[in-house]
Image (cartoon, rainbow, N blue to C red):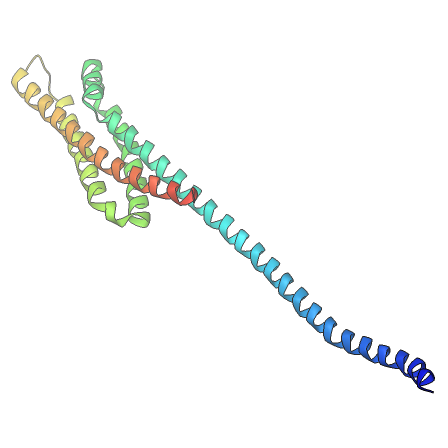
Length: 192
């Protein structure tokens, strides 16, 4: 009877144990699967966030480079060499004024960028802009003087233009140094 009891009860015991195992294991597996799915979802979100952050940094680097080149262009057009060429060509005042208007637009772009993105650079941007305006004022006066009729005044103004060009260069380099430092910091953020 013992054996008959065992053979009759044993399948029932096995069924109960299997049922209990299923009742216990399935929720554990479901919980584990949910956690795994949540982790995958979070990893995807983190990856997207990182991609957006990296793209933002790359955009900032490109903007810094564009402003750096714009400052370089303005420096070049207000250099001693440029002044010598303009004086030699005896450019009409109207042409110089037209170029100055273009430079003013470029300076406005530099100021907008610095004001919005790097307020700490505003002092150098302001000095750069003032030096460019001073250069233009001296250049304008120089172009109105006939060298043959008034050599002394012409050379005094010519020297003033050269000094103004040196100031443009000095303040342009200071601003470009700040931009270069900021760009290096941004590039460092990309390399981690």
